[in-house]
Length: 429
Image (cartoon, rainbow, N blue to C red; front, top):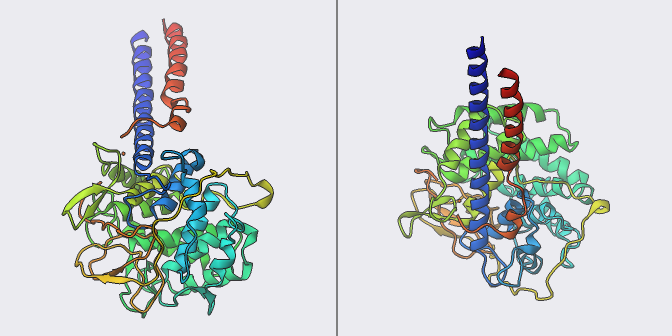
């Protein structure tokens, strides 16, 4: 009997230790990734080395880690300072405003008055024919709906309802997926990344009170599309082999679907973590110019948001609960102005989705998935986007002050386990 009790005790301790190891690994992955993003900040406060809006996505990633972006400085101008000063220039694309709104709300900013600019008004100026931006693009509608939902009551209820209906009407009638462009338009095809993004918009719409008779069915069909297209290795690809960016977008979809504990989600997380660079802490994207995998800020930020169990909407803007954010007295001068005129690049392998469609003058939202056809490069704050590879897998750096302020979860668990093991062991003996 005593041996049986000892065996049970040992198995219990082993189980707890395995849990602690896994939790510790997750913490290390997140911390190293955030440190990589910090290392990519330049003297204007922006995050560099990303192919589409790396500063906006990095701001959301820092927010998921509980880090105030006003403290992310190099050396004195913060990421927040950069975002305040980096207002889209005209002519702009809808996605220029959408990505900024998501970052502003996630970091406790006021999208109706951010550095004196009303981002909501600017975004809604692109609303026409019951949709946002280019009628042949779903990219700007998906991210537009996400941005409109994120700003809460500050956005038009009618715009949200109309865009939701437009999205559902453009869901593929056969496989249930979504594409970068709308059915019947050039380059149309469904993909896992855009379907993952579409699910986020649909689920957030449902959570925030928007209605459509086909909403639940649309969510279920899009979910089934993803489940049917998961690769054996656990990842997802734009075409064929798994790539980091597509997998990050899909994991965010699983997060909003509350699939955190599902087998599919666990396999997706494991593959995504395996794509982390052991040298600098970033997540890898394929650079066709250098013909190699390199850490990429956009890829890293998106992976961190997904691995944190979150999605692009971290909170809904409520003016009454707004926490004032400080800005540095020194405002950065944006070194790059977004352009809305896409320049096509011919690469038969993965290019990013965030390019606008051939008929569109809009700049796609930071979608960074590979496409096997020639797709125009996007206009964004980063003039030299890198391209992602769908064929290979994909965070180091000194801990930041913000990270160090957190008490490691493993310390708390080990302390509790020590006491618990003494109590149990004493009872057994």
